[in-house]
Amino acid sequence: MNNNKCRAILEKELVVALGCTEPVAIALAAATAKSQVSGDILEVTVKASGNIIKNAKSVGIPGMSGKGLDFSAALGVVAGNPERKLEVLEGLTEKDESLAFKLLEEGKVKASQADTPKRLYIEVFVQTDQQNARVVISDNHSNITLIEVDGKAIFHGGCENIGIQTAEEDLDKLTLDEIYEWILQVDVKDLGLVKRSIELNRIIGLEGLSGNYGLNVGKTIQENIKKGILSDDLATAAMSLAAAGSDARMAGSTLPVMANTGSGNQGIAVTLPVVAAAEKLQVSEEKMIRAVALSHLVTIHIKSKFGRLSALCGVTAAGMGASAAIVYLLDGSLQQVKAAVQNTIGNVSGMICDGAKAGCAMKVSTCSNVAVQSALLAMSHQEIQSTDGFIHYDVEKSIEAFCTLGNEGTRVTDEWILKLMMEK
Image (cartoon, rainbow, N blue to C red; front, side, top):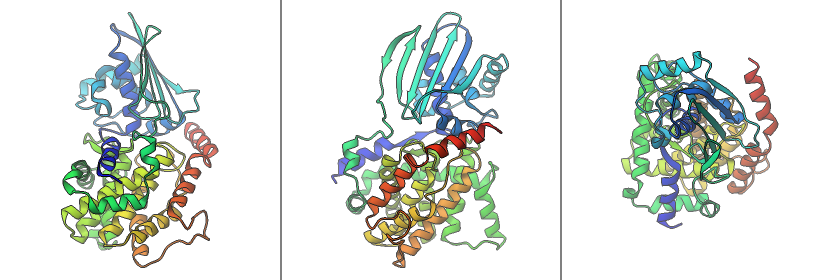
């Protein structure tokens, strides 16, 4: 695989994001709609697919106390800057929050489920006393496909079924063999974006360890290490730092993160277990950067087939990428990298997604632990056999089977998860 192609994939799939991506995408649609009209707000209507509702219903918004689809849209309308894309909510103030709550109290914002087969779909309609505008985002969190003003389309853009930003023909040729080969020979100077992902995501991980966020999963692990209840080993180091980053992000930290394939939480789960393991093993910075690049690319490879939103937790794919990277840190071979991915697929493939929330940090912790365990098994030449479950002899076929399960095998599960969430 040529150098430019892999670099292009990383540049398209690694994006700085502020706040959980689903409420941010709603705010982006609302901010874009508001930017098209003049006058006082009379009504804001949000329609979203079930998967968006799952992930926007309960998760924290950076620096804010409010939650939910309606609050996200209200923030976008009163204070969002659409030119900043997934950083649309940067720099919010208490006044902005008060104005958003005022819109809700006046009953001017309504949210409901959209009638669409798309898993990622957001439609925001803004009516003022002078004009109205409608904005549609689909298939990708920043992929605006339609802008209408007073019923007339002024913009048809984006790409239908985009899912992943990278060209399909480039991703079709991506394999673990090619990724591994590229990681070994690429000039580390070409991995500046990967280095930035380490810096950004490590900061939010440390913030989660020092602050008080969500369930304090990462912080609790660290405290129990200090008490001697848990051992200070590779697995707990990976679990605590990664979970702490998720704790902070899911609870609404104002710190930005480097997202992977549209998910900030996944970006954390791809980088921080590997960073923690690298620090624990005291490897060079160059080796850590190469390992994190491997984790990013393996996860992108899997997510390109898996899709952005599914009934299965996307952090499982991040765990597969992290397991490959930890093998690399331990000086493992390509075959051991593949074995680690196989082991991770056989372990966490059934983890469901029941929306973005504080509890996501527990899933990040679990997948980080599994990534270490799978890597250590691979280093001992232990690998789940093709006679077990849906694991194939060829790791690429195992990945395809896992992604088929996530895309096709869980559609009814997805409907039931949303139904159970909305009935509470």
